[in-house]
Length: 72
Image (cartoon, helix red, strand yellow):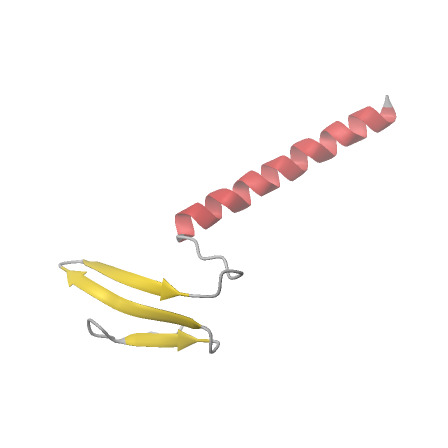
């Protein structure tokens, strides 16, 4: 993991097309802005993990149902 220090108003660039800017710092919270191409999905980690879990569950259910239908 790369750890960087940034101040309010400063930014970093990832892969030449994603810019992350520090917008505000209040106590232990930091507000960031993310500028990325529309085709690059950006999620909070907890939402991303929920999406992955839902996808795994859907794949398992659909797979079992397909097997049941195939076998009769």
